[in-house]
Length: 74
Image 1 (cartoon, one colour):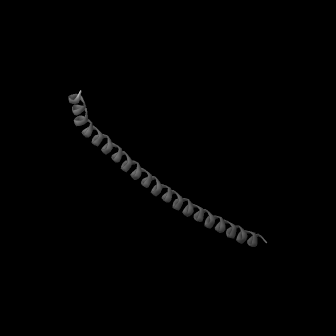
Image 2: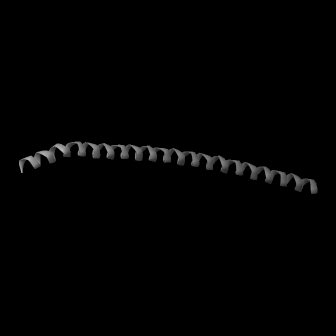
Image 3: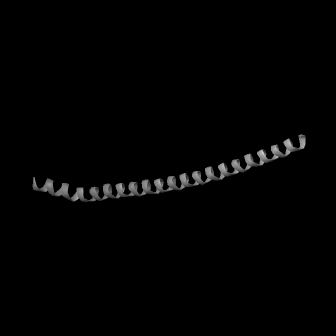
């Protein structure tokens, strides 16, 4: 009985170390993935702001051109 417990204890220590290392690696990979997703969301937001500003400027330009055409007609 004591021999069996000793063998189990000897083999369980490396198994626990392997499992712990695996979970640590998984956690690090998840952290990196979340960090990359956050950076992607920041870039998407910046892109949205730039596109919105561009569309606003184009709309203003169209409105001003329309006003000029209206003046020419009159």
